[in-house]
Length: 341
Ligand SMILES: NC(=O)C1=CN([C@@H]2O[C@H](COP(=O)(O)OP(=O)(O)OC[C@H]3O[C@@H](n4cnc5c(N)ncnc54)[C@H](OP(=O)(O)O)[C@@H]3O)[C@@H](O)[C@H]2O)C=CC1
Ligand SMILES: O=C(CO)[C@H](O)[C@H](O)COP(=O)(O)O
Ligand SMILES: [Zn+2]
Image (tube, rainbow, N blue to C red; front, side):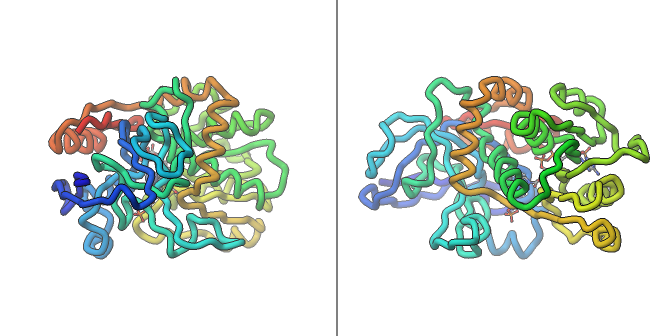
C-alpha cells in the first residue's frame, strides 16, 4: 500500500512523501488519531536543534507523542479498532543491564527516524500498548511525556536513598506539572514543592503541597531529592539552586534537555555527596506502567486535562503548520493535533 508521510524538510516546511509499505511484513498498522507536540519537535521545526543534527536527521516526520486505532494486526494481540498508545522507541537488540532507550542502536521516532505524522504508522507489534476504550484521547495523546516521568521515577527508586519526606520539582511547564502530579500519586506521604517562574503557571499546580517562585525561596528551605524539568539555559540555574537547597546524599534527577553544555558546581556535588541521575526517553515497560497508573488513579486524567493548551483539527499540511506555530506562542500546556489528514 502507498502510505503518505508528512516530513519536515527544512525549518517550518513540511512535504508529503509517498512510501510503498508492504502489509505482509508482520507490522502492526495504526491509524494515528491524536498527536501532541514535544519541545524536541519544536527544536527541529524551528531549526534550533543545531546545524549538524538538522543536516543529519532531516527530512523526517515529526512527533513521538501519539495515540491511534489499530487497523491491522498480524500478531492478533489487538482487536481491530482498539485504541493504543504508540511507543516511539524501536530497539534492535536486547541487553540484560541497559534499558532499551539507552541502547545506542535503538531508533527513536522523530529523532532521525520518521515520527507519527503519517497516514498510517507501521510498528513492531510490541510497540503499542492498549488504552481503555472510554479514555480522553486528547489527554492520552501526550502519554509519552508521562512515560518520561514514570521512567525517571522508576530509576530514582532503584538508585536513591529511601528518605522521601520532601521532593522539589524545578520547572513550571508540562514536564514539571506531570512530574508533580505523578509524585503526589506515587508518593502520597511525601511533600511536593514546585519551583517555578510564573504565577499564572504555578496556579495550575493545585495538587502540590507548596508552590515557590525561584526568586523567593527561603534560604533555609531544604528538599531530600529534586527533579529538574526546566531545560535549556534554565537547567543551569535550576541545578545551581537545587545544589544549594538539597540535603546531603540527595538525588537530582535531570530531565530538561539543553542544546548547549551547562555549568555545574561540582565542588558542592562532591561536598554534599549528591547523585546526578540523567534520564532520557522511555521504553515499553514505562508505557505499560503509565497506562496502569491511569487505571489505578482515575482522577489523574482530569488533572491532566488542565494541561491541554490547544486542540487543532489537522486536515492538511497548513493546519499542522498552524498547530506548530500556535504552540510556539502558547505559554501554557500541550498542543494536541486531532489527526484527520
Ligand atoms: N528527558 C527526556 O526524555 C525529556 C525531556 N524533555 C525536556 O524537558 C524540558 C521541559 O519540557 P516541557 O515541560 O515540555 O517545557 P516547558 O517549556 O513547558 O517547561 C519548562 C518550564 O520551566 C520553566 N523554567 C525555566 N527556567 C527555570 C528555572 N531556573 N527554574 C524553574 N523553572 C524554570 C520555564 O519557564 P519560562 O518558559 O518562563 O522560561 C517553563 O515554564 C525540555 O527541555 C524538554 O526538551 C521533554 C521530554 C522528554
Ligand atoms: O523529547 C524527548 C523524548 O520524549 C527527548 O528529549 C528527545 O527524544 C531528544 O531527542 P533529540 O536528540 O532528537 O532532541
Ligand atoms: Zn518528547
